[in-house]
Length: 519
Image 1 (tube, helix red, strand yellow):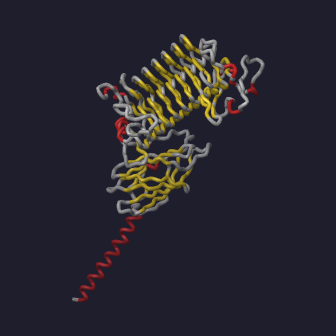
Image 2: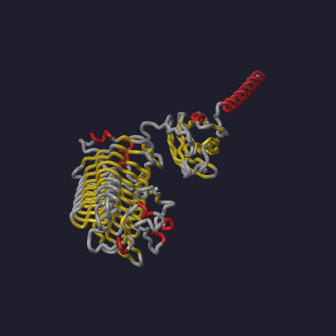
Image 3: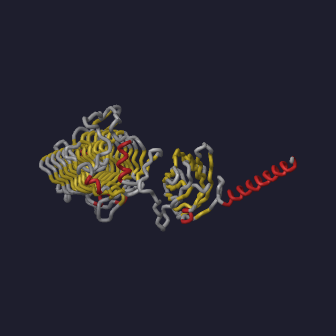
């Protein structure tokens, strides 16, 4: 009896060993273990990697600025947490929960950086993730990364219809419905993953259209200077070079009207909003109605903007904000303080910006800015038609500056020009309608023929154009001084400050037979 029991135990132990060995073999053959080394082309990347539970959909796309996108999918029946992707000893930290069956588009801040001449390069990366039992697992893989210069087009990653997930540090926007959910959490970090057609907003909210993201509430509860974030958008929105088109807003009695109504300490970048149709009352802009202490960078708008007070193609009112690399086109219409780019700038900077649209206003109208107060405007131009009455300028309707202690001058207009037709009644200038206290111009030009204005500034106290290096605009006037010849009627104007010179290497590009454009 004892021998029989002992034999049975030995038999069971033997079977257990066989099963364990079998599991090991199966595990190896079916990729159930944590680490592997695989070299794949971009087309092959659509297969599985890792523990058989993670798929890559599409390929890693890479640009010369050391960023990229990687699309994951969870094929297993439990949620895991992506914690880190390490590429060439550079870490990308995450805390992204990926649910069963879901895919997640991961933004890589650090990846294999492509050299200017490379089309592809091989990259090794390590994925670290955590199971529901808090076990840390890693996958190592080699892949081919497609560089920006590759002549073959990069395939767009396959994305779900809606990809809004508030558990992510960077919330992805894949649809108009996702876009509309931003209003639920105005302080988050968002990235636009697809072009979005917002045509259906014409039927939203009893035909009032899109409700602007962020406002001062129904009774103007937030104070511009008190940083009240209760209602305002104070997060980040990366347009990711994608496009939002056909946004419709019809709120003729509305304040803070635009894609974003009121932005406070926000960051808006890489966004294109085109073919808009926006109507409001006060603080109206194609992207933002009113912005306070925010940065708006690399943005573009087209369409029709209608309002009464503080109306701009991009922003209605920019207060202590920075606007960098922006341009607008379309029809901008208002009554008081109207600009092709911005209605009113207060203690702000506008750099590398232009407007080509038609601007129509009444009092204080400018091709770029309606009223610029204590703001510095650098490397800007306008080419559209400007129609106003009092204080009308090809670039700015009214501009004022101030000296601050110790020796800071606010209210500088530098390296800018206007070339569109300017029409007005009183205080009309080819460049500025009215230039008040300490408003200084350096290397600024206007075309006396196309603007139909013989004077740079419309008011009698304007001294910026002639005494501080303004000039009548001709295409050859912008050539560097070393390339000037006696055949040119208007030489390039220079100032003792070397920073005032036009930079044709990094900022401006020459257009044969025409005026320069921003690169």
